[in-house]
Image (cartoon, rainbow, N blue to C red; front, side, top):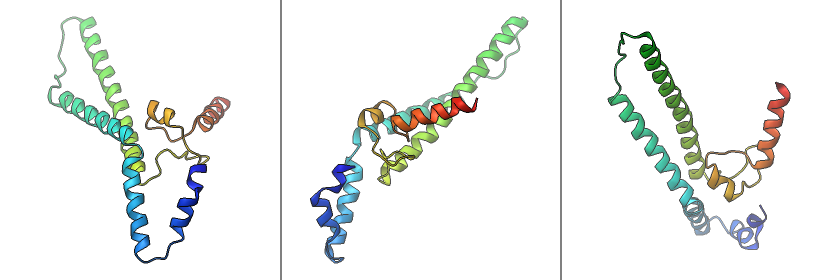
Length: 148
């Protein structure tokens, strides 16, 4: 947060609303594209991979086979249920990826939703869909454990 209060940014916000405002908005929009380009690329790749895998699963989805042996039938059903659980988790992850990409676009990526502090780059790189800093995430997990 200290980097945001630099003297250069303070003077740029005090410029007259003529041509200076458009220049400032251009700088802000270019900053959003360059602040986390590697994380944005990683998110877009992960999103594309999930969508591609989902497409393959849907097109090459075998029908429910009937096996003469009850054990084989049960095993096939367990495999299918396992695959469906994986797809459900991927669907949730896809939603989180889309939300993270939207936050990057709106310049709110990397800001903790709870304390509004900056989320460290290392955390964003390790868990790009995160919305909480380490301290707030730890507090959230402690609150969840206390409710159980």
